[in-house]
Length: 328
Image (cartoon, rainbow, N blue to C red; front, side):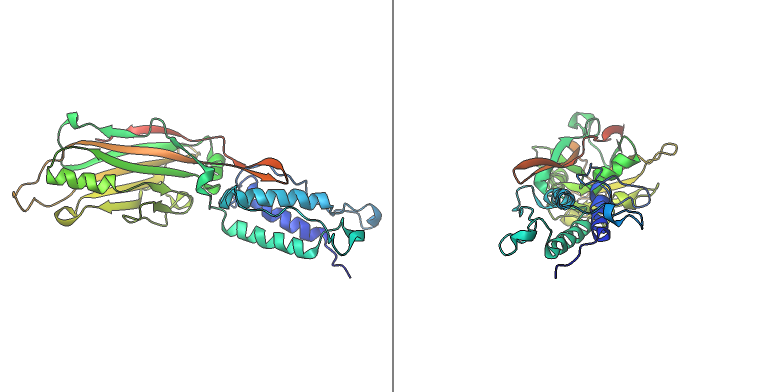
């Protein structure tokens, strides 16, 4: 005897998909990509004395739900992954009921929804658009003279509102930070700084973590949802040998203005904390041009299902940058 698929089961699955793909809310801020849904409102509502006119779950309802679920997973995994076509019924052995949905297929959608939920901050690299964050990067030119001690770069990243900030990070958006030194001489300390920064790769600030793509330095489990109004250290990369006390540090904090929580303030400290050079017995001045670069990784993806191309996730409201203190 066929298994009866209750409307409540569809509604539970739809709510799970909507929670990931739809609009975020402050009660559950770590959910919600801010996208429109293919599915209609929940079904199955009826008066107790009007069973004949009950709002039943149709095959189209499940196909629309399937589309939304594949939009999520293709964004997370890759738009080019192999995706099974939506299938209704058992065409091979029971053509009389081929318009009905198999229970096993629905169970598969439920499993996929659970996977999508636990992987909701993941995004395929091919689904990120990398762009410079205008008015956030900064350089300290060699013509500004030599330096010792600490130079800092402070900037804010501002979203349209707190909701758009949540959508950006929930969908896998990142603020990417990198640094480099332009120098062609042979002075040991500056060469070490050049090695520290030019081989550091990119450090990415995400929803719940801060990671480095070169596997160097020390990242943290601090991300967008872990900030307070005080600076928290996100990442550290130090020098080598006699320059081990030289450090590149990234900090971030909530930058609230009034009742708004739409902005994040970052601080980069480049700390020349090394001891005196053991060869010469002096603390060398630092030379060269130091660059602090800020980029955004913006989530954008499409997927083709049954010959039709769908927007999977599109984040079209991107943050802006403001330099508070140029690197100095």
